[in-house]
Length: 202
Image (cartoon, rainbow, N blue to C red; front, side, top):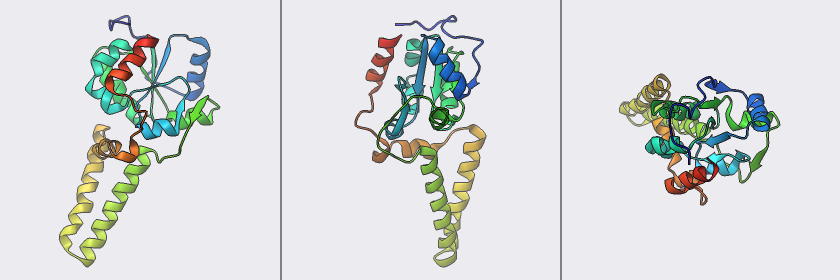
């Protein structure tokens, strides 16, 4: 087990790397640890071979425990980079300053010829957020015209939520959707199991 300290992170590690850099690190660094922070369904659909599954909500709740298990070269991945960046900030706040985020996420890595494991297909969480938000806005606009003007407040509320999400780089709707049954996996680890998985590698 690796103890979290000031030498546990590579201070010179870039905050963001591209797929080609990650592939080069895989070939040249035995200490590389890839952490996938997406939902269970997304991870099952496609993930980088050898990556560890630690959903963002779980990492956020147990940041110090996970940081203590991580090695000297950590790359955080998600579908696009947004959730991985949130995870990086959580880890940075507890002293793990050397983690990098994969720009473009798992799809970019796959497109660059990286080794991935594929399973059943599912919509990425970001796509689900767009569909949900768009449907609610459309329902609010149509409802305000044909049912009651007050239903227009739905569209305003969604717009305000999206604005706040962009300003804070967070997404309450995404966090809610990630807990829905279709985004869960039968193989999704508990916090204890995820920590054990990292411990066996560290």
